[in-house]
Length: 446
Ligand SMILES: [Ca+2]
Image (cartoon, rainbow, N blue to C red; front, top):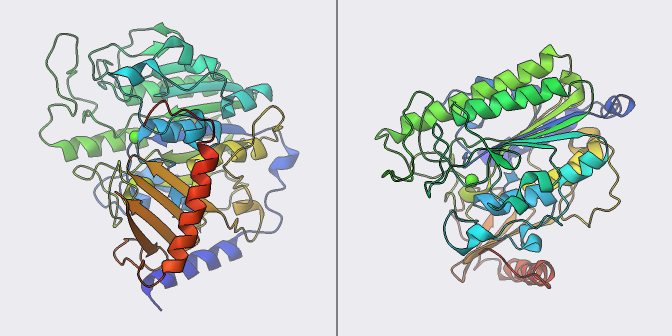
């Protein structure tokens, strides 16, 4: 038996043993739970302590993992920012909203965005009486008509670009990018700290009613700037995309540790208000790390690729009293699963919401066994991928590869010649999926 097999058996056994049958009933009798959905930007599979980093210290995220559920096989819907966010918000493959690629700060995609007619999880929860707020990165359209306040959020404080200077808040085109709803506002502060501070203010303001805070941090996306660095980006000033710190890895560590401290403050606020058992906290990343500064653990590939390192990312669910502590699951989950999951745990009606591609993963803690037997698909530029059970078909620049992810999560052993029938069946499913999601859809980004 391989080490990998042993580890997986442990996870499954632990999972089966630790969940009391009665779990999952307690919250149904109480008020509707609050939601705090935190997403890091370009955080890799090996970038935090509970996923194996021994250089970056993340005690607060580690505590969430220890007190809740850690996903070993959580996937971003895309290996880059905008499409993952479109899928997270809509609960559907991003192709259905035309957003297969990044919305860039320059060029024609700057004029496009997620159509306000799309239904987001914020729309759903708002209709169910929730206060909804977004604090951090949007990246689903620069124009005001694409602003989060038109997509179900009562309140938006943050930026609409892919990245901003953490101190001056100018984007990579030298355009000022810090907003309160539809207005640009000047605010002093390190981006990470501002996001934390506004999230805490929102929680305190709405402590007596159900609230949903979507908290997409900028960390650890470039420019690589720590809390004590100088601002670099201003109009008519020369600056670089990645920033001027020569020791990028040190800056990267400072950025993640700063975010971890912020998450600690958010959790402490929830606890101090006595809302810990009434609040579902979820943490994830939007795609894999940039390999030269970050870590994707032992996974192959990085941000931008459909190798596991580009799409398999950290994810933690924390809800004391409902989700048992010290759980791990290897059931695959994906960005687009959050919408149906949030609908389920807030008991929100699906009325008026189109069919979702994601699935409700609350059975991970309400049932002793949960295996949805589904197939997951990715498409980005000249890459396509399919995962079903242990199998992953990867088509990279028209070249197909087949991997057994149970035995080989590093994707080192191509089994396409040994199992041509498996590859052919997955390819057929991929073709059918592409026909489905691209039916009548005009892609705005690629
Ligand atoms: Ca990203």
